[in-house]
Image (cartoon, rainbow, N blue to C red; front, side):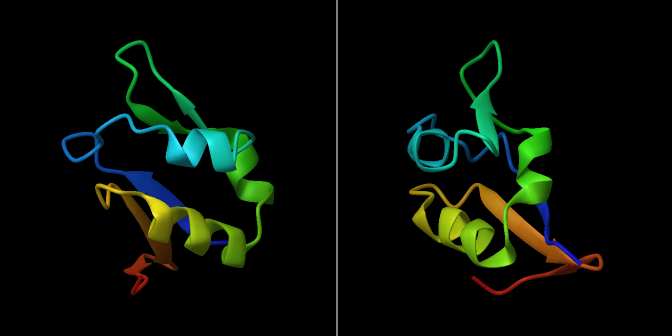
Length: 71
């Protein structure tokens, strides 16, 4: 089962690292904050983990069957 991805909008600093590295999984909303796109479901867990670890503000969180994944 693929990780569930959530973004804490209060923590997002709009750096764009997630969007530039995984444009099928992340995009920007009208306020230029990161959002999870439907394509995130097709990324493997390793790629999602890499994206979450690269987020400079730590705004990306991953969950496995409802439980937080340690980054």
